[in-house]
Length: 116
Length: 113
Image (cartoon, rainbow over all chains, first blue to last red; front, side, top):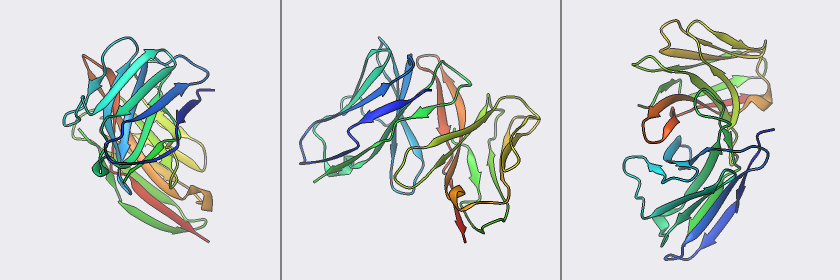
């Protein structure tokens, strides 16, 4: 149980394009989902916490207009990288937990974004 | 606040043991341990909630000290499949967003034949 699906797994696109990444909890309802960014051989950096039906909470230094998050249902959160540039190239991973606090986080397989 | 992990990297021969540490300057709600293989998503290993707790099985286990400021992950008689990067995560709470995890910088573990 507790499967999280992330799509697409790989995106290569031109500078200036907006890219949408989907994160779905397949067999459970996720009130909260999390979006991370990971650079090669680095740690997972929390970008934002996405709560169903409300605005996402962004970590310090993360541009909310650049990284749009929508959590329209209990099983789907989306991250849109708007007007992407080469410096936005990274590995983006979402996760979800069954409930708030003291629960394992279940990760999607990640999306490798490459902006040319 | 990001937890501090040590060591940064470990190279083992199959069958050897390793210990990975995770510490914080403040008492923690809980500690999570994850393993990530190259190009893949992190996989949950275990979570510790109580001071003094020990968890896991014979091969992979973890402890949480009484003050809830340090956790250690123990890998016993390592196997090739143990290779990967191990992250500890500590929970933080925010009034707007609720609970979230701060991850350490990771410990890269390589098990060789």
